[in-house]
Length: 217
Length: 217
DNA sequence: CGACACCGAGCGGAACTCGATCATGGACGA
DNA sequence: TCGTCCATGATCGAGTTCCGCTCGGTGTCG
Image 1 (cartoon, protein in one colour):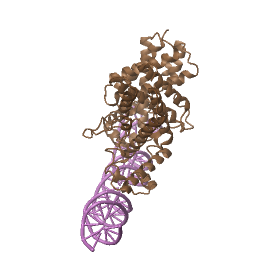
Image 2 (cartoon, helix red, strand yellow):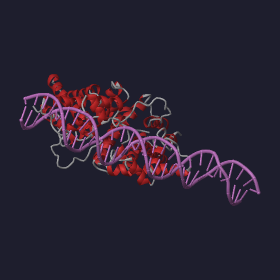
Image 3 (cartoon, rainbow over the protein chains, first blue to last red):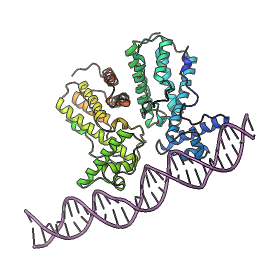
Image 4 (spheres, rainbow over the protein chains, first blue to last red):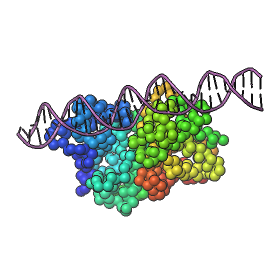
């Protein structure tokens, strides 16, 4: 069962300058990210300064730059950490709930997604999808497998869905749509506007059943 | 016929410090935005400096700050101007093409949207929806009517669509979805990946016919 | 005591200000 | 109908402030 494979590395790859070795190092790194998260929540993306991160987390600027190459990397790492948590939450949900249809599995994904936006500070500002995508800097090709591809593998192997090569494509479209609608849900309502959340579910259900046919396990 | 009403103001409201009075002022403002647009296209969002904008447009830094309160406002104004052009393009398209069904009208919207991404410099970086939405700064409530609301009015009055109060909501969801998929289409391909563009059309068609029933005028 | 972790003054550069200077176009008299 | 005048819009750019980031030196774990 490949479900566990949708968990990624604990810490963002290639974003930190030096992986922390000692315990306090790891603590610091998390503290830095926590600080960044709450600040982003409060004053937004581009008003965040590295000095603020340092002050909030009780570190010095030097320490910030010990772990991160630049300001942007902090934000990216923040996203990565949140997504890593998201992935592991999905895994435990799938294992405990043991969904019997592919739709139940997807629905679980949506639920986790909503929880992610709700509970992860700063995430409703950062967003799931990285819109500043840089065309995959050549050289660093140990890039993490995209979420949609992994989920497509799971659906294929566990539920025998046959979307062919198109499955990953359609799942990516699905993820984009879901993120867009949920971002809207959380844009003005930090708890998430239920109307949009419900609509996201409905849209995804309609989109996916339109591709795979009615739900049946 | 209210079609004309979906054109907004000529210049972005509440983003410029001083509305230009004389002709050269308006020219300057446009020149500044043009410069910003091409620079964004070339080197991206956060490498854009106000000094570059000044130099490219043949102005001084002081002039930049005469019209814009800060760097971010330039980008916002850039989006607003592009969207204003988008609106007027839609108007002329609807008037010249005279679509006979509501779907044709929506399809025209999608076409314009794609053209917007293709032809408006910097727009594929800026994106249609503002993801930095700050909960509507209190005080400035002469905020522009959202695009989805206006389009919903047009569809209601011209094609007699009856989505009730829900129509505007569903159209907003539709716009969010479309922008998400099209952003993806233009993320790595400055001409737009046709596969995603087609999918955006398909998705919107499915979503909207699911709400209004099959297309018929 | 070696390596890991941390510090913070300081440097370069970008964002933004402000008082001085130039240009425009409407008022107004001839 | 013109020309000139000048209030006000528009422009300038050196200078200030603030921010991202470096680096050599100082703690503190194992």
